[in-house]
Length: 226
Image: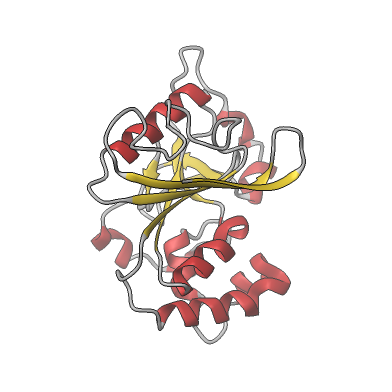
């Protein structure tokens, strides 16, 4: 299942979670965004390496931006860019992909889907080390940014239909920024979107689609529609 602005557990449950019990790879992106505003966070310095100070500066600048004033943007990570695991609140959820400690323990085998395509696991969040920079840059520019994580183990047809339905259900215009490889080969979500992406199979919620990254032939590219 794909979700926008991934949140596991209720807000009250998450507020009571001691984030010090979580490793850098287990931290939800929402918590990472908050921790980037602290004076110093060794886990994030280890996670982001040389980019840590720049991300902290971006987080602080985005805090000074008037929230809710700009256009809505939906960020879609590429394949493998969403975390997979057992849902729960921030403390009880079990992240398998991408948590190096869990993978070293051999839990990667749990990612295999059943023969009928089902699984007890689902997408939980985005992999922050890959996507934090773009998220914070867009927020700093005044955009209302949301993440759309998804279970990349499912077929592109299934994922495309889920994304098309999500976009179609939006009551306000929303632009899509997708890492190439996380959508169809055209760089647009599967589901018969038009060139301007008018609602994907109906409606008029989507205003623009932009794909970034490597194209089908492996060449670095940027493409936009709308």
